[in-house]
Length: 109
Image (cartoon, rainbow, N blue to C red; front, side):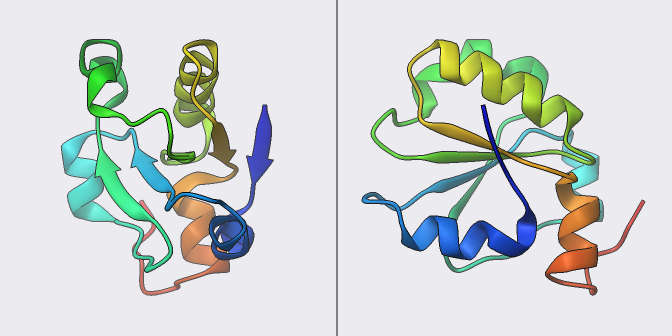
């Protein structure tokens, strides 16, 4: 599975033929605490545990970048999505790395 750092996500998004999705798989309270902001991708929030039941909410024609706190949960979700035919990458380091590499105004927790 492909990995991408937050600092390269905008370049990756521009290289896609369809507008990508940034799939945040963290819990709701985590999203309220710290959220990624980008004009290059559409943010979709589906907590990890609900992905199998909500799989039909995701468009297989659009590339997906999975995001969580540090990259572990998102890697599991990315592997699951890849097995179901999605074009997916994992955001290494998660929202924590996003804060360090892209937007220091995002709180770390």
